[in-house]
Image 1 (cartoon, rainbow, N blue to C red):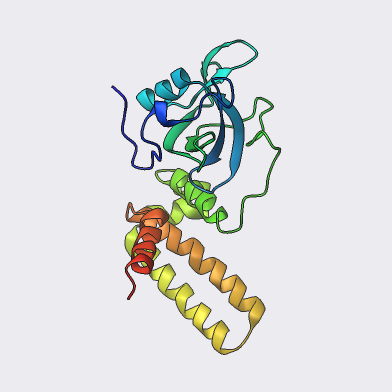
Image 2 (image 1 turned 180 degrees about the vertical axis):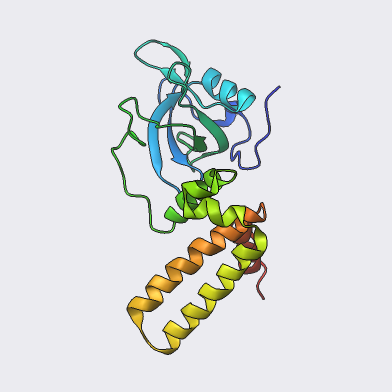
Amino acid sequence: MMKEFSDQAFDSLDSLDWQKGNGLIPAVVQNASNGQVLMLGYMSPESLKHTLDTGQVTFFSRSRNQLWTKGETSGNTLVLVSIKADCDQDTLLIEATPHGPTCHTGSTTCFGELTTPAVGFLAELEQIIQSRKGSAPETSYTAKLLAEGVKRCAQKVGEEGVEVALAAVANDQDELKEESADLLYHLLVLLAANDSSLDEVLEVLRARHVNRP
């Protein structure tokens, strides 16, 4: 049975324009966490249905003339988060969570080592912080901070918040940037310690923006 995805922005497989591409539709895959473009593939109705049924991004291989699920041999899979069609219903935008490098060369993306957009780097940093949870405290500062618990993480956020305010009042631009970076990092650590996420915080901001008077 086909899974339902909240961001599936097309009515059905039949509503898509398969004729323009001789039965195939180009699909751009984007990292759901940071917006980085990972690859371009092609989908047939069968590969799209398989993607929706399983949650594993599956393409149609033009060279082998068959379906192929990303990572079926390498293990570097793409887990579906959302899928949308463009205004002409002839191109797909897929948001996915990559497990391992996407490119067969070992690169993060098929377009080389693209620089993650500045804001998107927060998502990368959050993933790194999450990976430190449960690690031995001596392995990293992040692991040590998480092992010390929520109160210690909260204390650091308070300290860094004060440092940001002092730097701003002193009009010390370099110090303001440094302390702001410290504050953002420690806030992400605190969210991780509370089993919360940056996405959840951003959803609150988005809701406030939508519902503002």
